[in-house]
Amino acid sequence: QVQLVESGGGLVQAGGSLRLSCAASGRSFSGSQVGWFRQAPGKEREFVGAISWSGDMTAYADSVKGRFTISRDNAKSTVYLQMSSLKPEDTAVYSCAAKDTNFRDIYYTRDYRYWGQGTQVTVSS
Image 1 (cartoon, rainbow, N blue to C red):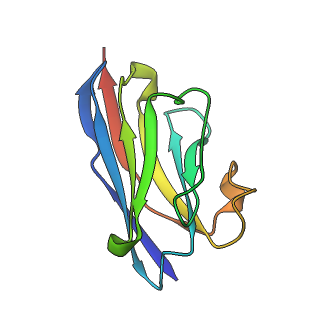
Image 2 (image 1 turned 120 degrees about the vertical axis):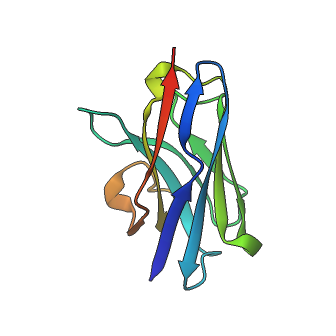
Image 3 (image 1 turned 90 degrees about the vertical axis):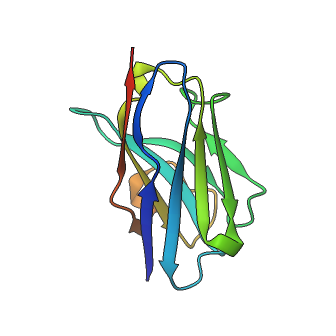
């Protein structure tokens, strides 16, 4: 089992930045692919981005490409989501998720086995 805990959310003005963290505990995390998802009120959860277990591959949704960056530190069992140039439409609960299978299937919630509880990000205009 892997337990995931997100942190770093908060209120920020449009154009600002935030860094979210996803800390893992339990069994080894270093072999897991990790994804970030977000869910805004009244909307379905959507894919934000993902990073491979080694950190050499990343993928991003078009809506965040060029503004968000995912990285990981396996020694600290932590994955980061650096968000810049934030927009009000980025307001959502952000959750991280982990999977042990390939990096090919990363875009849907059904692809992931372990989930964190989420952290709120609010971007004011």
